Length: 102
Image (cartoon, rainbow, N blue to C red; front, side):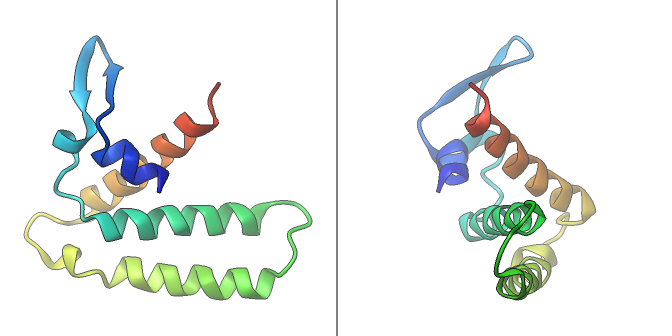
């Protein structure tokens, strides 16, 4: 998936006058958790789109993905609190915005 490439691919990005590698900065986030968050964001966007069809299936998928995100074993590790949840969402959001930007 795109987010995985952003996190673990060989790309280097420039931000605030310093180069950093996504793999190094976010290596503590498990890949399956990143993929689930990306699927959640895509499902949410599809559900929020005007005239979206199949909303019942999208809502069910969103609920399943939300459950997977909430109960993922990563969140039981020390230091994996609300800050890490926000970081996960930010990583996925930034990767999605980067994909859309020209």
